[in-house]
Length: 135
Image 1 (cartoon, rainbow, N blue to C red):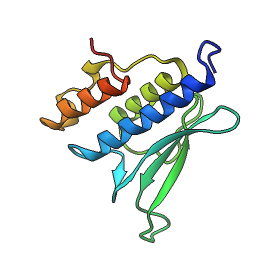
Image 2 (tube, rainbow, N blue to C red; image 1 turned 90 degrees about the horizontal axis):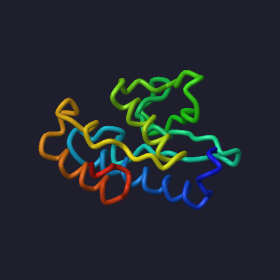
Image 3 (tube, helix red, strand yellow; image 1 turned 45 degrees about the horizontal axis):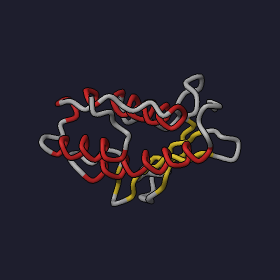
Image 4 (cartoon, one colour; image 1 turned 60 degrees about the vertical axis):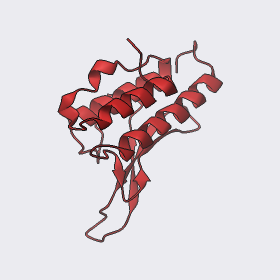
């Protein structure tokens, strides 16, 4: 972890990142949401960062579950993450935001998301949370 970021700041950024994931899952194509279950990020006692991905399939049985994916480092493959490159990039940026406080660039949220007018809401809410930079 970056020594410049206090534990309080990191915990606040995790809360903000998770609120932002809920916003993304509430609008447009509702990425990272399944059946009103929203994916979320957590940090373990060792400071490692994990994504709990909302999924709907476990061994052929229709069961709502979260798949826990280690995202603290890019050195390891994200086993179980099959949501595509754009969402992988989003999660990486949120991880870096949590670790360092570096906000996401609003230009990342373009038409290729296919969120239509809902993307304006997503971006504005991200700015309000301090997750997305205004510039």
